[in-house]
Length: 172
Image (cartoon, rainbow, N blue to C red):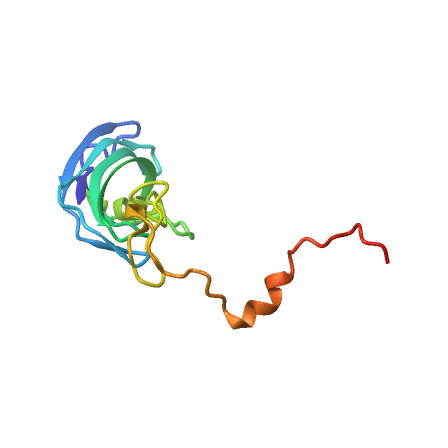
């Protein structure tokens, strides 16, 4: 995704409207795969600040993935705003900044970075998703399973009585 800034590059205070659509490749995200079946829509404005090109934009897209708890396929809508500065490559800045060369700004990394920053680490089909049974794998959203869920790791058996209430009214 590229933005032509040739018309504002040499005029401080000049701006252009942004209205771009682009397809995105799938993204691997914390063990899940995010797929984008419709093009991403980027709308906003690019402004020449004198030292950089400031981009204020809104990203609209939807993605498909699986619920982090029950693995059901889900589709989510994502709408985010971002503001990023892009400095000409001739800038003598000594820290990590977005740089552009010539008359075009490549937006791919910034757009994908902002998408990743705004997606929850655990994507759920619903807020109260119960997930899968850790023994038989049954979807607990559709009802309880018949598994005995009282298994205790023998290494922690000593801790079982740690929080039991003791009768303090007994005389010694």
